[in-house]
Image 1 (cartoon, helix red, strand yellow):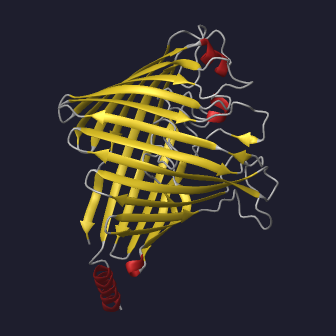
Image 2 (cartoon, rainbow, N blue to C red; image 1 turned 90 degrees about the vertical axis):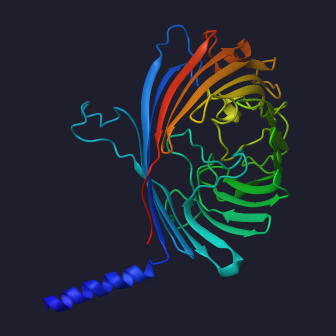
Image 3 (cartoon, rainbow, N blue to C red; image 1 turned 90 degrees about the horizontal axis):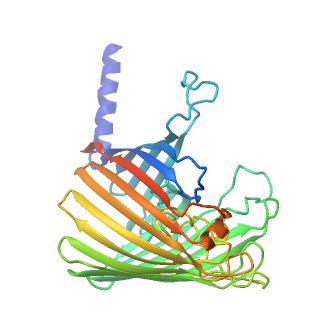
Length: 422
């Protein structure tokens, strides 16, 4: 009997080894704590405010299994603020509030020469992340429940995806929260014209319901181009997106977004300049929606790192935003890079809810990145904002300080724990 058990065990291991002989298994970890000193971050501070110190962290584990025809990714993560234990005990004796969740979990299946199908929770990161992004500053990150088809040939790449979202497994109706996208569908085509230039076309149909108890879905259509050019002395990128269709209040949409950025390379120094224009509503009484919706685009990356403009509808009172900025990168050596960026902000339009004047204020960002190892880096930044009275009016803080500031220190450790061609 023992011989039979031993033989079965050896046979099972042998069969499993043969099955995985052309597979690869990799386990990656990420640990990212961040300290923040907030004295005007997101919300303008007033003289009576005491600066807030916050420490938060992300702990993520990613398991990736690959064969010639299959890829499986499973990535759980824990996100927490230090000290957020159950309120019944400040010492955490009774344990932490649950914060473990699934960041990614999907399967990619090869369909012969026809391409790949990706099914499940996955990141959708396209172009400069203006409309579909990872949102990495956010501790939780951003992944999507979707089905995505991918195909590559010669200098072309094509992706198409679709999603259908519910808050629970309903037995009737298709109700959903009106401030969230019920159905996200997209097609993306990119062509590499040369080693220095590539261009991509993106179309997104994003549908929302009018209320959480109505079935009809109104689709906002977004179509646009993104181009990127780079050679030995300069790098430029630009995009233009136009929105049309219907918002979930059944208004016609006529909105647009433009971004342009040029960076020059001069040895260890790389200066650059850019402009971002996001259209807004100049007349709230008409039946047309002119405020551009950035959908699932990056927030922290654009519009200043003080994060005053995360929701353009409420944070600009539907006025839209213009961001003119200039920056300079100093590469001290292979491990240390310093970047200073200055932004000046205006409203794109004024309306009955905004200030009469458009200028909002100036933001300055000084950031230093120290990559001390291939698996680890330390990033620190000091930011300040000089608001105008128009910004005070937008945020409803009439007596806000003339000087707003924000400091952060972030440690990122991303080792590969295991990697093997099985």
